[in-house]
Length: 426
Ligand code: FAD
Ligand code: NDP
Image (cartoon, rainbow, N blue to C red; front, side):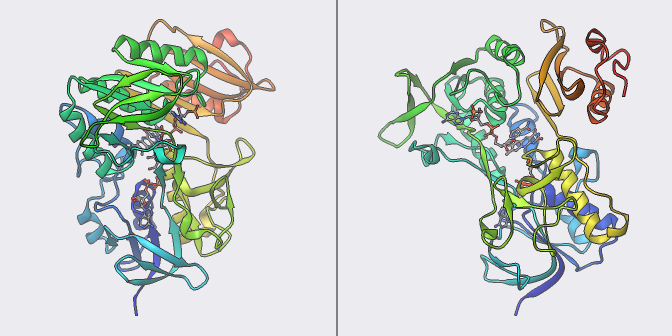
């Protein structure tokens, strides 16, 4: 015999935290909602782990960044869950699930049944072994996905002050960690196979601005090649890396950021999949009507681009979570999920945002030798995406609206003054 809840959320990350808050807003009763997480702490804002958490001075620490502070909402401490009668089962993994019978089994041997299930299991970091390189077990090889990883990374950084780090991967983790390593007085080489950093989003011109900025902070970019193996000392610590182009780099520590994979194995063969994620409709409902998927695992229809997407970013996690709860608890007043892709990052003193899609013709604007510049993408005469570094809150509201409206680009020169007056007519 096990316990039974009306609503169960598997996973206790960003989406779970925002879902919990939405459940209370929609009037969930005490004892109706249960969240099961294999992390030992209540849901927190994961983006803090690669930013404030890694700062050498006044670093962010829990309980400071529990959800939902990232969206300027209430901070849900463990006590908050108690006060709201939400059962928070921490440090416990869901081992198996039977969506037909609406039951799941945890690693503690408990069986839990539900009426509605929300899958919020997020993703995991891709391991070096998956790209044919041994060494993940070495003490000074770091990944960054959860609080335990971030705590380990901080400890290793403290031991390596003044030493050398190799960052593997030039994506989000690579770029954000490289900046944090510099702040911790560690010499950084960043290695990735592409021609420039953030290849899937940045244009060569945008990438060149950030790479030059990093170089001015002492970062060494090793592009167009990748890791082939590590050198180890007698204690099993990595001391250097061999690259495919024959070069060797010394290392006191390694940080790996070579992508993520959604945690969906529990549902293989039970739900419909797309883009490696759980396929949901525009109410975040999966192929089983009692099961919803949100955050990194959800592959949802995006009307803006006319396709189905899985988005590994926090804004999507927050919005899909709120929407799924609304669809479950208040279906008659819940419209179809309407999502505008939005990504951002903050490194050093820099801060950028991107809205929409980077397809079609790209036009750069602004002062690339200054602090405010960007690029927009137009497709068939309409604005479909915009990147802006150094904008004000007001600028970002304007570009988000222009992109959402797919505004017609009437005068490209006008767009350069995006912060002064609306350059586009809807
Ligand atoms: P997660 O927040 O990953 O939560 C999933 C939870 O489920 C975890 O607690 C996990 O342990 C748990 N879980 C998984 N399987 C099981 C199981 N079987 N049983 C029990 N529990 C389970 N995005 C941005 O837009 N901006 C950023 O600046 C940014 N920074 C980031 C920094 C880092 C270091 C990382 C790793 C990601 C960052 N992201 C950022 C991405 C963003 O954090 C994710 O898209 C978001 O956290 C996804 O939310 P989620 O709830 O789907 O998954
Ligand atoms: P990304 O997908 O952003 O980047 C992976 C990087 O690894 C790419 O530069 C990729 O190059 C590179 N790569 C792939 N294979 C190799 C290889 N063999 N050797 C070296 N580099 C390689 O993933 P991350 O790991 O950076 O981030 C993990 C997750 O965390 C993602 O879901 C991301 O969205 C999230 N995150 C988001 C942040 C944000 O939104 N600000 C901040 C931090 C994390 P290529 O592109 O050429 O394949």
